[in-house]
Amino acid sequence: MSEDVRPPTRSHMTSRSPEQIGNMTDHLAAQGALAEFTALRSEALQAFSTQWNTVALQLTATSVVFSFALTNRSRTGFLLIIPVVCYVLNGRYLRAERLVQLMGNYIMADLSPRVNGGLRWEYWLRDRPSPKQILRWSAHGPLIFSAISIFALVWVVPYMLSARSLSTFNRVLLELIWITGLALTLLSTYMIKVVFIGNLPLRELVRFLQKGESRPSK
Image (cartoon, rainbow, N blue to C red):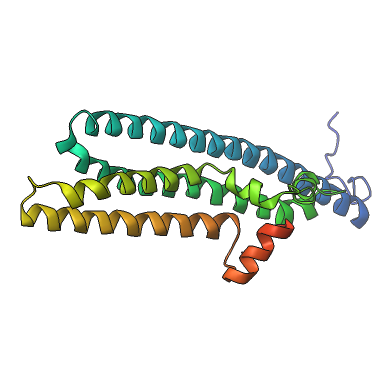
């Protein structure tokens, strides 16, 4: 005998209360935030690796240029390549640093509220700044770029002033390259200050370094 097949009625269907739906939505949002947090932490580690590789490349390039330039006094002008290299690599380093800062801000502002109890890692880090802010700032890698650039520029000055073999055109060209290298070095130093400390007037900057306050907002 055949049996009648009837569609399930509403009483037989499983229903969920608004509270259960809300809890499930919050759980899914928290799981998504945690997965995104894990991905961002991996990207931050990759950014740190990029910074280290940039510093290593900077030291290697500097060693090669200095070794070549100092073997013969007539090659001293090649040291002016260093400020250009330092400027490019400094920009790459600061880009990675800025990326890490933006990820930290995003974790605090967007991901943390989506997780019950919050993601406390970024808050924990920022609540524990170095007691010696000036040491914390000077310990960052980009200052190596500026210091090496200044050293190279200073080394070239006696050569430009005393080299008799230089023609007038070559001397003027060398001086223009030197001025360009100095401008790039100053710009690199300013970029370091902006990324790590912020846009502070000189008086506030000195007070910030002396008192060791937390990093101001960008």
